[in-house]
Length: 402
Image (cartoon, rainbow, N blue to C red; front, side, top):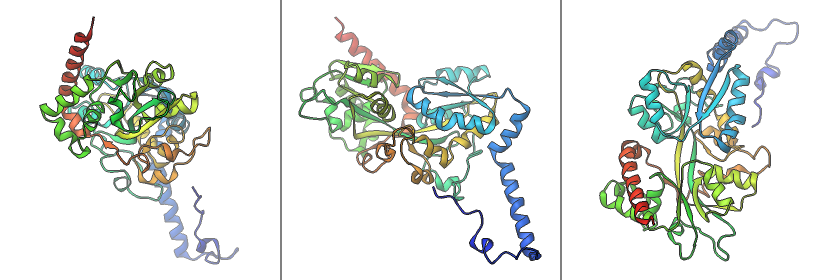
């Protein structure tokens, strides 16, 4: 990004009084007001004020709950370490799998050990509805570099009552490039075609993405997915298609799909696009992504109730969701920014020079047939749908057991 000049052409040239002469009074007053305004803005900055507070509390520490693996490594480099450098606040990271059970119990006990949680938007909506989260009211969210207000800069739905979306990730299908000589999977439908593409599959043990793919494979238009899934008939159609898969493995940890593919235990797997990218780039994995039917989802920052450091948590969210930080994150892992002003700042991978724009889920080349997860639908139905989903899988496993 090109640096802005320190002064306008008028002030840098003949518009300034010659050395030794007195500047006009109006210019002096204007310059004084501008300086005063800049001082006030810097003092009001959540990170600046937090840095001042930190000098008086050297033991400050922020606990963040995140997802581990390549994703957490990218966050360390792009977010956590720079935030600590700017404020003096240490960031301690703990891991979880997205389940809300522990958060519910912690809120009920009146003490939550995590100051900030990295949470999918569907989970954030559900947690907010349950009263588990603090209302953010856009506290600390900063304008775009050109001054555009956050409400106009963030994508639609990114600023909620209890959350701020920081990136867009996708659940995608991937396959071993040496598994199918002479042909390659290119469509979601190929996941269910074990005659043309034989071999074990690995899917996440959750209704998300699996239900959508099962209906897409049967020709249901993307626009009709959630209307049909809201009916017993649609849900049964989707689950029956999943039950028809042979030699199916279920995963719960984000690093499992890449490992199963690299070890040759499966030939096709669902997973997060950033994890597969990392496996190919840093481990030389023989893996390729099928972008058809990718299921896009918002990833958000939230602050639970009863946290120890609420102001530090909100200051971190303001720092981590700035356009510069969002663009910096894409230089380590290809998740799409939630701010329009961050998109032009996307560049190359920090270590390899790979053009990261081509690997972002929201890039036009990749998003032509994307499904945008209906997170409000999942927030209101997730418990019921998951119970039904698990019951059907348990019954299937019991029926196939020797």
